[in-house]
Image 1 (tube, rainbow, N blue to C red):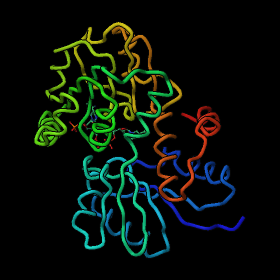
Image 2: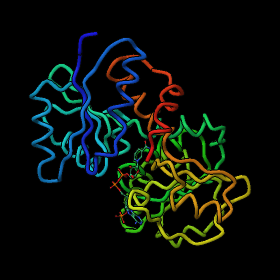
Image 3: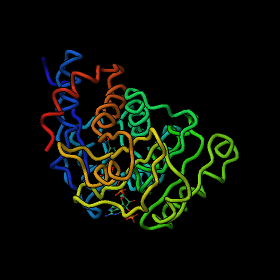
Image 4: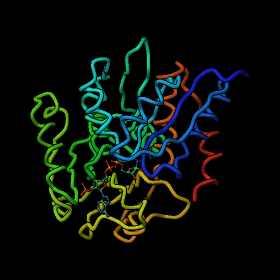
Length: 285
Ligand code: NDP
């Protein structure tokens, strides 16, 4: 099996990333071998490291916390940059592909989340959703969730202005307004309704803390979803079970599903998710 292509994930922190393992397992399933490495970047060297990667023969890169919005801006400003519709509506990028000297940015986070929720038999149609966080991950999942027909999405964030900005951009498009009612507020405003699904799209669980939300905000038969994945229940999922969420999930399914969508963009093959989840699950710290 010759090594055919060079891939990487770039972010900070990056040591915890399972992307190299997941992509190598997908490649093995598909009968070929890839090289896939982790790149630790800072805001000041992000652009230099990206250039170095492409110049050294890189074919595709995943962008992770906290650079998804920066990568979007870079591609918008680049003469040889191109964006998929999903990347454009998200304003954040998690997958970049070098093709015919053009860098094409995409965002597969939303599709990954939707796939995982549907796989777990959560009914998105008509659901009232509280989206906590306003970074690249929150932006990336907004449209794919709305496309599934949920009735309302309320975005709350520690820094309210960032949630408001996402909401304003959404509501400036009439077609979006027809799709789903989107509103925003600070974390305290989470008690304006009961929620069928609360998604923690903040990075708080990485630091073993949680966004401070009001109590009694889950509806009957509701779900708590933390995008962060770990072997233990995160503080947010603990809070949610105590607050009345009927079930909870971490973001492992989303991680594997969004990686599978990147893999599809790069190789044209949609790999099986379950065998890979079974390998990664026991590796979680
Ligand atoms: P960003 O750095 O772009 O955004 C971070 C967000 O978290 C901001 O909204 C920030 O609020 C908020 N935040 C951080 N710490 C706290 C805290 N202690 N209390 C309240 N809010 C906090 O990160 P991303 O949006 O790219 O990623 C967010 C998380 O989602 C990451 O942990 C990432 O690992 C995970 N993720 C998982 C995926 C998966 O496949 N499972 C895919 C994508 C992301 P503020 O604006 O106030 O600073």
